[in-house]
Length: 552
View 1: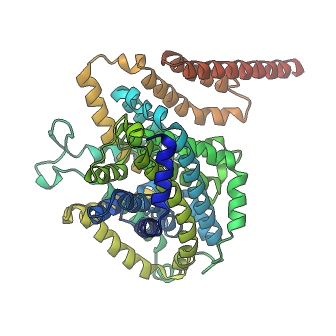
View 2: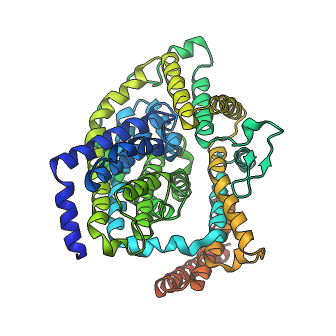
View 3: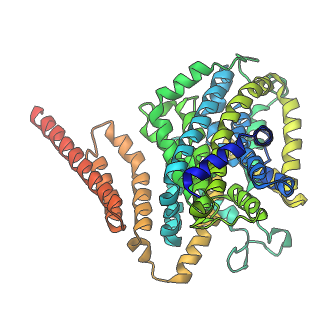
């Protein structure tokens, strides 16, 4: 069977009315679960998985992919309307989505998020069709040294997520890392920081921390007194309930460079196993803020701050599916559930999956793309109902939200310890907000801590030679990016005064070094292109500096 034959078979099977209906049902279920704080995408996919056991392969995959796509898109609703991310993939959406909603532009804010989310998914789907085999191989090249360096690089973005106070941002990140150190070591099973309490052996689950920090801090900040508790979440009352699709689409298109860059970031992060959209949305937001001409508007309702994370988190799902269909390695927990669905139907993804079962591969790819079309149709209608949430008094919403979040947190492991974890970290988050500490670095540290620890132990178990972190090309690349990221805020401050004129040229030059060390003609050509750009920027900076010297 040729790839084209497989495409035609998949298209005819997936477009059958019943299969389209099942795909739409999966999307709707994902949208609803994603919009409820405390219920993760993975939880939705795992709950739906048993219902696909009796289905054939095509309808079973249609339901699973629908839940996956709908869940990642539904998280923006509660992130914008309530300031509480429905899923970890929507953490960065709260930073500018909530202020824009509070300014009375609910429909426009949600419309921008919806179109950015869907367009990011479309572009990622196109890349999924074209680049799945070559991109899938990158995940195997990086190794534990590269993954640990990637974690260090991701942690450096705390500097730009801290509203100019790097020290408070780093302290918040350390609190998140400390929270992940409680409990048994994931590799050796050694208990740490439990103080003899057996309940702490399992450590703190990520979801209770996320919900506690965001839900409690946001709700308590919104209800400092009785009068505030009786008002609605919107500063302008119900606001404009219409979704201006044309205006939102034009706004997203006007910032096409932000969307394209965020889509690339999301796709690349999705290729990396265990990274996931919880990382890509923060990284994309950070890069959008760094490259913006008006970075001071971020956190106050900048549309770029909505486009970047929403484009990235949907694109991450496409990257995760690339690794799944190319190598049989799930890029994140939700993709792992899709892999389980494949195994139930006696389909085992592997490096030869695309050549041996092209029809199944194209079912996955087409379901991912068609799922985004259905998201656009279903969510654009449902948003009119979701938007009305902002007209409900806060004290009513607070009770409902806390009930559902407690239920979602309890459902993770069926134990009250997770509920108490949510309360404790809710108090921590509230105190951090009161004293001016940013919440995003804490969440980032919580997400990245376990991944970094496992890969560090793996790397040192293979070889205790620490120089491998510098001699492995991917590890060296991420370490260079980490140093450049830490220096960027200082460069940004000096650039306004004409300082550090060669920063951009040096950055490109250093980035080209590890690319030269990697095998493959494409990477060598990319490195040469970076060197050429570095030379041009250095020459431009030199001429500008010389002209300024001559004028003085």
